[in-house]
Length: 187
Length: 71
Ligand code: FES
Image 1 (cartoon, rainbow over the protein chains, first blue to last red):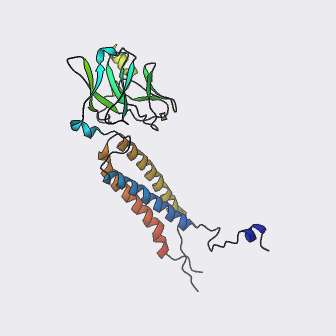
Image 2: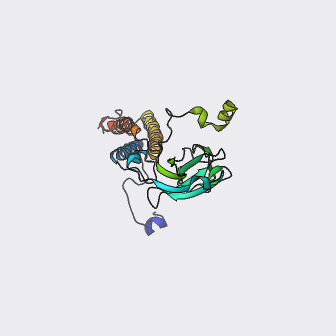
Image 3: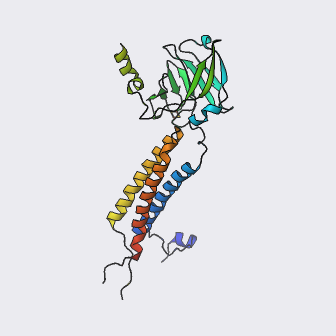
């Protein structure tokens, strides 16, 4: 006897209820091919992804004036746009008195970071970055913020002049990467 | 009469699963690197991924030419 739902939905599939190991293996293999195609696409696509770092753009960069360096006291920050109207960046003076600038895009899921209590904070999932090199120190982000190269001109004005390449394992100065260790070494 | 039976061993399925996990990890790592502006990893990652996919496809489709045990 056919059940009531069979009569209500009289759809018959030959392989209904049967998903063989072979089909599953093929499905997994095709998904695997999809990942390869994804990496291939990233390789083939020359343009950087939306919101991605692009240190290569450096030489043809248009410098952007950010005001007088002396106007920014330690712990203060100022927002600015760099490459276009969507490229939100933050200029800050660290507690040690150095000027730094970063792209505001959090490396976790892209929210805008802000400078508060001597750290860069992402309010979305409470991610924190240290202000000296933009390294993540707490929360979900695992990659450093994109850093903007600055230039202080003789008239005292600060200019954003390009994007710094992100530190890689080869270029990483491990002592600089760990602020606590650095304090101990320089003390 | 002997009917051809298509079989894939649990071991082969396990290998395919492991390869897929490696692919997932590789893709995530490559995406992170690309977002950081490090595109130099792409050629190497692509060929590694291609090799893993070739092994997966071989394991998954090779079984169609095998015949199951005779009854
Ligand atoms: S988006 Fe910044 S912590 Fe999640």
